[in-house]
Length: 125
Image (cartoon, rainbow, N blue to C red; front, side, top):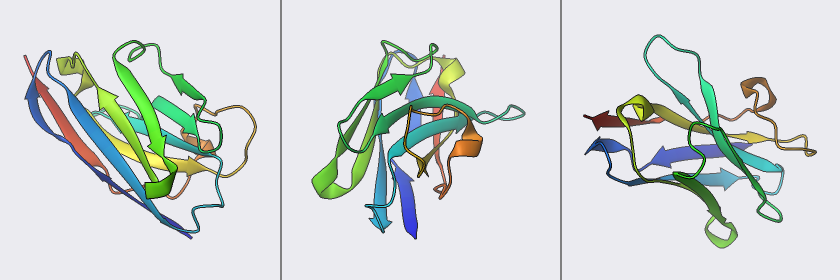
């Protein structure tokens, strides 16, 4: 089993930055991709970004492209989401999860499992 723990959320103002962390423990060799999703109140959980554990190729949602950067530290079994130029519409609970299937980076939440508990990001205007 893989366990994921998110951290780094908080309350910031528009234009500020935050860095989220997703720390993995357990069978960390058993997955291919780590993804970040977010869910705002009353909305569906949506894809934000994902990164291949091996090789480091990444993919972003259009809404965050150019503002967010996903990276990983294999030695620490941790994936980061650097969020710059935050906007009020980025307010949500952010979750990380893993894809065990390989292949192209999936953007659908159904491809992912082992979800963390989430970390709240609130951006005030």
